[in-house]
Image (tube, rainbow, N blue to C red; front, side, top):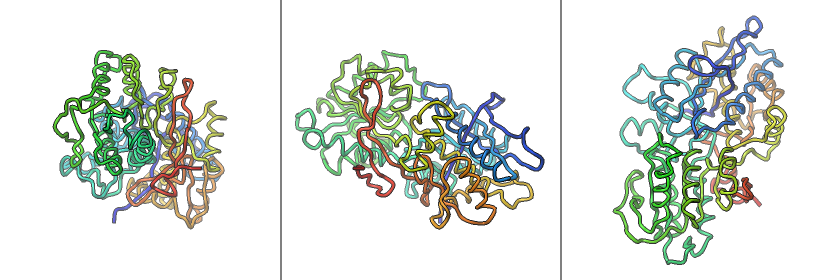
Length: 483
């Protein structure tokens, strides 16, 4: 049986060799050891989620305050490294933080980076095996953590299936996002035919990676279940190194999105393949994207220059804070689906309140996912190190195994905040189970490292994003609308 989990990570800053570090080591009282989390994430490119480091730091600060209150013999430190949206850099940084900083777990940002890092543990080179759990906070690739996944080769397949149980995520798959988008889009016109030409056509812009191709494949399958004649055109960016300021390039992409030709009709049987091109098959009824921040801003600007009249629907990343800041009123009328910014539970509300008090701002996109990743892996490291003569000798495998023991339904509920984390340590010390309820939701990892959270249909109105409708993917994975 695949061993599973519940993952985590991240937190704070002080510029050092391979990245930034928040470390209580010099302030530790005698006999107190520091356990290291490694965060491998984009911080500087146009695609970076700038709010995430402070969300992670809030979690680590509260964890350490709770451990101090409980008299625990450990503290948590984070090494934060920058990937600049480059998977090869992400693998290098992950090796550095595990080998040189003795990190017991890693948090990563995107599907591309998470897959690249996990792949080192399934390739033919045992020298690069990290053997620590990897938690991704925005991995929406549907075939990640899928025991039936088929990759491009044997190593890729083994990575996606992850039989050893190293890979986790604290966000929904694209499958749930597209299920909600499907219902919204098909409600327009006749089975999605919003322009009345007798056809239902969707044009989708994605990156050339598992997340991008998986998003298109999942979207096509969802639409075809209701309208088998759907035409899904896929436009693949060569990224990730694309100049977001190259207006000529983006104007060309925008023209392909809205024209009445289909250069690549998605093959229903192979995610990365296309059916033969089609000329004059109609203007799209809807255009969609599943890109990183920066790229979706660039294409939105290009569509504005082209005076586009087709409704533009987005995945989660369009709701990143910089989108509204840069595009302002240009976001009006655009819609998308993302995880709720925080859960409506007591834990979610306290997280939002604590963030406002500590940081002077409200939660932004996936801040709660980062926070929960940080907390759960921190708790797993603390739990796994209990009883060891030297807590710093805890292994990545022990941390991985502890992750699946944090959401025991028979355990006492542990929410967010220092007092709750102190309670968690006291339960560990007594050998009692806990059931963590997080900022994003229950954070109940299934047997393959996946979780479910509530989703929101958001829309641009008056230059800001607002929630139009929420959907409960936790109690029902078909994601019904919340009254």
